[in-house]
Structure formats: C-alpha cells, structure tokens
Length: 98
Image (tube, rainbow, N blue to C red):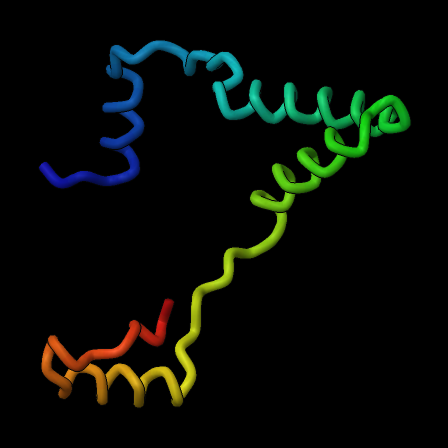
C-alpha cells in the first residue's frame, strides 16, 4: 500500500495526538519584555541618573549594540614576529604584540 493523499488523510484521522497546545511565553520573550520596561523607565528618568550611572549604562548597552572588533596585525608586526622567532631565546627582545 503506497502513501497517497487519501491514505495520509486517513492516517491523520487515526492519529492519537491531541490539539496543539499553546505554549507559555518563553524565557527569552519574558526577558525581552523586562528589558523593554527597564529601558523605558531609564529613558523617562534619565535626568535622575548620576554621570557615573549614565557611563555604566552606555558601556553595558554598547556590548549589545556595537559589533565586536578583532585585532589586526599590521605588516610591521608580522615581520617582527618572524625575526623574533629566528632569534635565540637569550637574545629575544620584547614581544612586539604587547
């Protein structure tokens, strides 16, 4: 017996699964609502914040809003690293990347 649209309909009628359950809001959705409420409150009462609080707020928010940058090594640093690797341990200078 092959699986056709008719046999699929019959199989669906015999299914023991009940109706789809409504899921409660997920933790992520609840956290988003909480963040929105807190941010709304901060925007409304920002004049009550001290300068230190404002700086901390901007630092915290920038971690989520601004993209992270990766360090890039320039050509000079790469050449210095190659030279340093060729020198003996006793004669090596400071690490050029630090």
